[in-house]
Length: 376
Image (cartoon, rainbow, N blue to C red):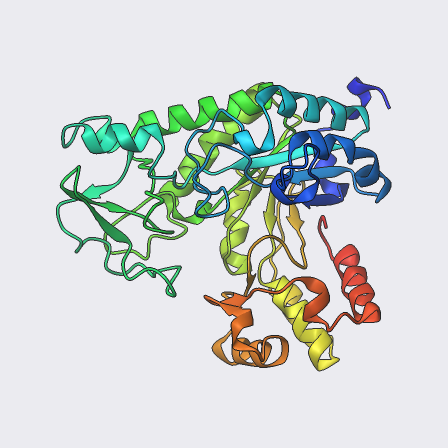
């Protein structure tokens, strides 16, 4: 396959088969006990042989790794454990040579508190542009109607910073301050990071945690109209300069809310179908197709050029946010009777142990994955 023919297909994501890889745990070329880009390059023929045509890389950037790399300390770089920037470039080139596209992460809701932007913000004057890269308050009373995502570890979405002498806002862990998209400089910096990786040849970007980009008092701070304004600006930049690349929305929401992240075909190209995933396990447990047909019936039409992303498992817990309390209790009892397997609002088990390593059920679930409307 020639490079030009391979890249010249703006809707390639509609019939992609995507394989998720964590560089850290995939293959270790230098025998230091940690996977690396050199090891991943060695295994590209194996990955291509599986029948997939796209590799999704989890965050490989410099990071304290308190949230498995989603706490990014530098957007333009490679964690030294995984190799160098030259290794990352070589990986992308070698993947493309085999007809494999590459998706990576654009984590734009928050950074690590170790990121230079945050270190600069906490030292800067109150109200200055540098301070306002993040969301600050003198009290922790604002945004009272906002749910806490990690109820098992966090008591509040505000954390006091002794250096800044203010509270900073975070939807995730207290070491992951949220960026402030009401400051135009933030979007400018994010677009610059996006161009950096697209210029390096990355074919798609998974937008992490995008329902939470904007904060407004008196709301639940999810799926706000202003968030969609930000996404339209990101998409316009992509369309203007990289028309064959793709944005994938990670929005753990009900189908009618997730649908909004496609816009009118002017926001994300793809979005994960979170509510479908646990219902495939429900259907297997109950030996009844109803949980699947019921959620597909509730799934709205999406713009012609857009696509759902379908998955059975990924790096997160098997999230049970998008089920009712009764369904969650059922799934917990069926798949995680041992309470150690439960975490937050989900189950921390891989696919095989979830179905007691029953090969026929593993094959059945994968058959469902590959036959659902969307990209597996």
